[in-house]
Image 1 (tube, rainbow, N blue to C red):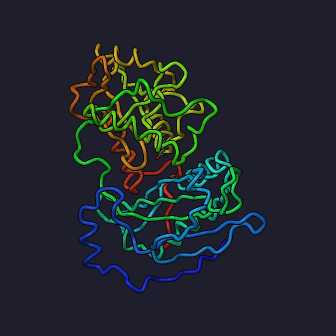
Image 2: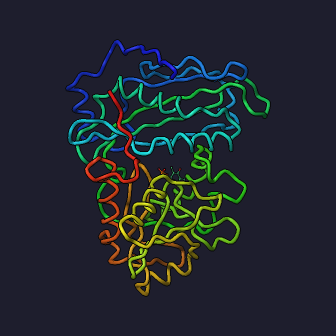
Length: 361
Ligand SMILES: *Cc1c(COP(=O)(O)O)cnc(C)c1O
């Protein structure tokens, strides 16, 4: 077990200030007092593991990440149960995905025990920042950048791994169903590309279609496959699922372009455990528009760590739109899955899967 040295901030946020910041934190704007840092160099390996006061980075302007974008990240949450205990949800899955992302971006692969160790060491120091209210949690953002000072294009020989922590409320303001824009021109990922890796570059290329969505009154984008623009892939930050009128739940299969969402995987397993029929099969966008119009598909939702499960009210595209259910309220299967998953994550439901990972503080 690697020991993290701890340097406490000399200017801690007071309990009063913290309570004010955490009253309505929204998403990703409020940060805790500290951060975890680990460095890597070829030949030396991982070194200098520490918890330090959260502060700006000093990196050389020729640092490779600023030019060629070797950057990967993760997102997971720490929850506080009714008994005050803090737990993580499937953090080993995030650690494993971080390694897979690093491999695809040709970056150093952080061992799982360092990934988990950094998160736990940070939680220990910033434990008072884990909110107690049911809808809130402490969002953890592990990420890694290449920081060799060199303008040549090659795999960098130095990396910086950091974990930030940010108390969050719900990801979307309001609880209603979101309208989703179907991107018919821009795509997110092609076979053989980086779609399966959680890298910043995938998000950079999604911002223009996101703007197109916004110009059309939608808060999220749905991406289609890059080859035929025919099959549904995912939403660029969340996976997508549909409920058929027979109550079965269907989602596109992982095929190399869709990010392997841990929420997606958890819903598939949890749904089966609850007795629902959970199906992974390709979904043509034309068929989904038709099925929503005829009532053969009754519900749609997006899923991911930040928003958990968010109902989709309608799909919109240039040729028109289609609503799921009444287009406004979350459907019964969506709510059932959402309540079951949230209950499990917060330790309020039995955990037959061993997914809840208690953290000793
Ligand atoms: C992170 C992410 C998801 C959701 O993954 P979770 O593990 O469920 O949070 C889905 N799609 C993309 C592109 C992502 O980056």
